[in-house]
Image (cartoon, rainbow, N blue to C red; front, top):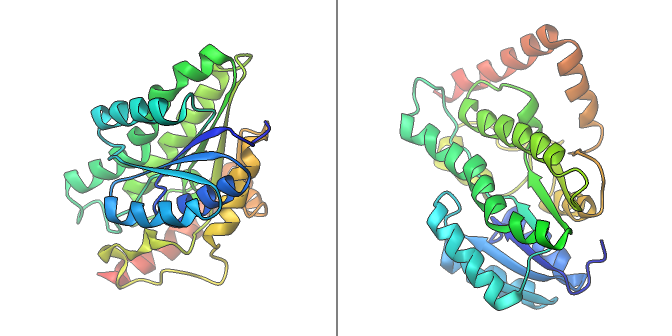
Length: 263
């Protein structure tokens, strides 16, 4: 897909991966609709993106279907039909299932998974009508591992991965593609939530937002179903599916120690 003068919607566009992707797309001539909940931070991101091209902000909570529908109408009126949808909005609350409230668990699923569902439903019909479009869903390597202390987040990304795989099959031959981008830990405001205060937030292997954004932009023209970042992480995912009991033992042991240390 040629990107010049295309229209892209980027959720979670006010910071981190979303903002980095929006900047890269703007540099390539894409007219970018940045979507985020916090209007003040969103306005700052729009100013930054607009230095490189076209950026317009839309304050919207993607977990609210009515807000998403309203946002989609405004995007259509301002920018026209959407060619690219990047479902990136997401957050995590660290803690055991026992310690988290049901509403805290539900909130992660509503934003991370249902937010992507709402946006996909809002823009898919116009893509199908034009027989052209690309949906890039930002999941996580955590979509393939159940990590103690991250059960709700992992569940939302497991759901994202399954939804994307099924949707990709449904859309075969329609001209609309679906690719999942699954990074390891990324150095973004994601970890600024107070629940992460007492645990190590980054490792030497953690990625920059720009590295993941480059993978997202690359995924727009890719026919692959899933792109892991970095690519070597695919080995870990393969090992998890091939030797699940062995990998679960080591991963669960490591994360249990971190969970106990944070309490």
